[in-house]
Image 1 (cartoon, rainbow, N blue to C red):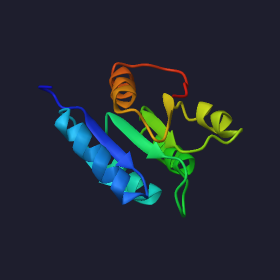
Image 2 (image 1 turned 120 degrees about the vertical axis):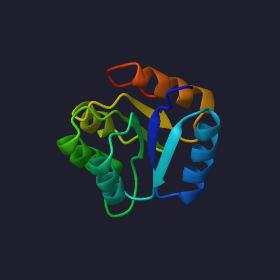
Image 3 (image 1 turned 30 degrees about the horizontal axis):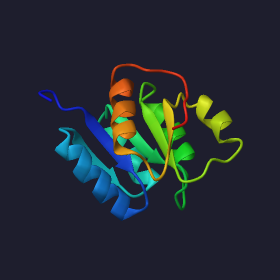
Image 4 (image 1 turned 135 degrees about the vertical axis):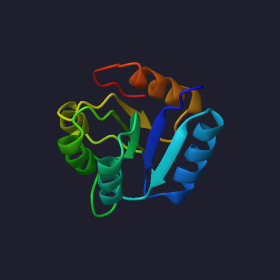
Length: 129
């Protein structure tokens, strides 16, 4: 990629952040990681990311809550939620947040990269993978 897309990975599991960051950097993306929703909010105030990969279940502040706060400052932020579980009313919360996708953990890296590329290209709607 000549013009690197910027990605923010938000997950309280540091191992997941390191692994995803390494893989995405090898694919040519500019990657920043953080382990909390509050930190993600602060980082997104400082910089607009092309895509935010947001874990849903985190201590203190959920990914959905963090996404809502990020969208207050950056309404066009593209958020792809990641989760190991799918609560029944999760889709309802995310539709209001303009989520592009809900990606199930453990994730398939090819599907993840495809969703990132579609999101950068301006995809829309909510899908679960």
